Length: 224
Image (cartoon, rainbow, N blue to C red):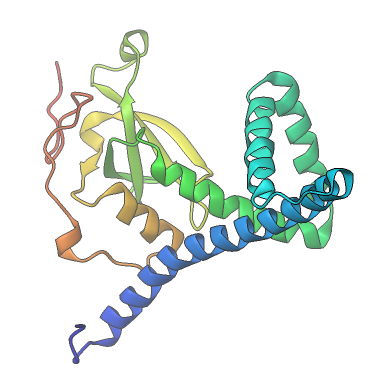
């Protein structure tokens, strides 16, 4: 049971945490429900009219087929060009633009949270000294790029708020990144909520090194 005495800060954190969990799930359910009803109504009625038989679940099969076909098309050059033209047309329609951009942002956020490319959350000074922001370490730079600095360089991705799918790719010295114990998921929630969500201490865990070999938990020493 939840404790009876909760301060406003905790209630606000719980509320926005719940929103970040419920909205993507509920939105995904509504979209899938609409798509299933749409495909089942069209292809189910079409098949029933042609054969006299109604097959329950035909909409599910057709939806899976359409999703697979869309994935196949968008993974090649021709499909990517068609997808870009479609997005350009959708974004030119005022009302449709807002709906499409919102739904796409939600799906992009979900997909970016599920990627395992972000190895660690750090803080860096960006866009100027004295201003700190979250950054995700994506690995070390190739050897030929290391020659431009006597310090070890790492790749980081700096997401923007409230849409973390857009951001900046930076190459910075490793010793300029301050390691954090916060998880990638909690950092994403803070970015999306504009800082309204604050993870509790129980959700953080100390990490000193990840599988990329980049040391964390303290300032890294110069290689030279």
